[in-house]
Amino acid sequence: MAAMYCIAGLMHFIKPRAYMRIMPRYLPNHKILVYLSGLAELGFGIGLLFESTRVISLWGIMAMLTVFFLVHFYMVSNEKAGMGIPKWLLWIRILLQFVLIWWAWFYL
Image 1 (tube, rainbow, N blue to C red):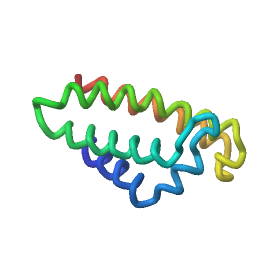
Image 2: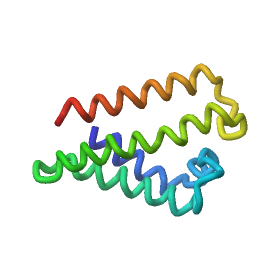
Image 3: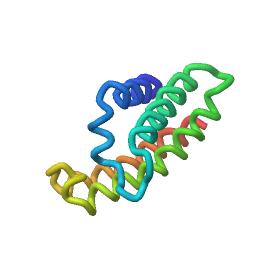
């Protein structure tokens, strides 16, 4: 789990435009939000590696994934943000979000 979040966080800095394209229009400062979310993913991923920060990182991951529903629902409702990905696949991605939240909860 730690590796997954660290890699995902790093990708926000390597390919920020890919993340900015899927940001809901009503959210301000897309570039800053992309970098902040990447930093959060990276920080929580690293936090999972240490016993002293594991629980707070798990709670942070669950909160972060909950906020990310904004992006996933925006992708379903906005054809351009959905980048041509079939709607059924975007809905599966939303279901996967619940699985990721459960996975973090499982380790509490």
